[in-house]
Image (cartoon, rainbow, N blue to C red; front, side, top):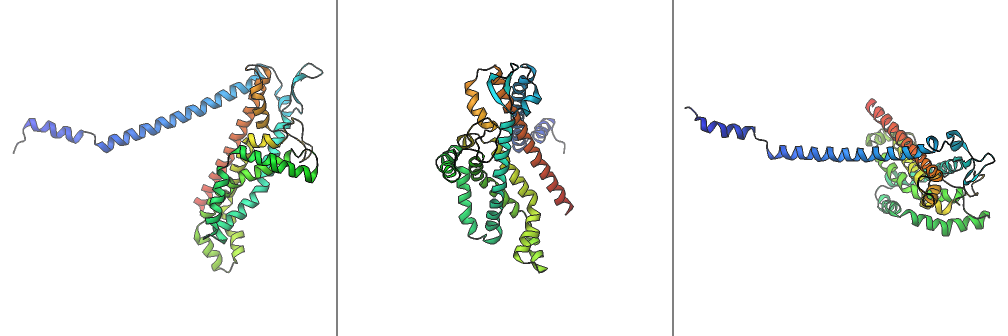
Length: 317
């Protein structure tokens, strides 16, 4: 039976017509790509803006990069004997690294012990108790940590060791409490990602519980633990307000844990509102911001490297 020509076109059109699900799929991909492009544009714009402003200290103001990074005197308003303004960022760079490394060294053992308690030792009720505590510590604003450090930590150190109480040690204690929940949460995830047959195999060959934890679980979770530590260090390195309230804000080379010091973030928050846009002092602060950005990228590269090594090791298994 012949099909009329007039009926062929509607059938053909219905077969070639895009379905509703196909239209929704294309719309979803368009929205996703648009959001991705927007995020990429924002990131590139921030990088370009900070780098262009930060490099003006060296290109426009003709300040020696070596003297800026390795100089030990930061006094933008007082020229030296040769008439050059004194921009030495080494005291702030050293102060930032000291409080970051020390806080990470102190927080890591506590974070690992807490995570082992929540995952391996008492997973039933330990997680019910510790998980809300960790989440509460994450949600506390930085200014609250700084105020607690200013009213409790600083007077305590002053009464015990003398001096002003402000300094590297006070900043380390405050940052230790701040980054502890971050490292703990990520370490818990790393321990949970260890397959159960690792535990079962270790116990089956006669290992004790602590031998299983130390020689099997921790070694298998070590890449994830290292990632957690780097995340904590990245947060500590970029923290501004809490550190500024307890570190002393003295742009001098620290000569001890109890001496007043300064960090890149504390100098930035103090000085950025007191300088004129386009001045040499303002350009120098943008250069400090550029150094912070470079260090943040460095931390991200370390995290990506650890994650890549973890993927390779898991693939070999």
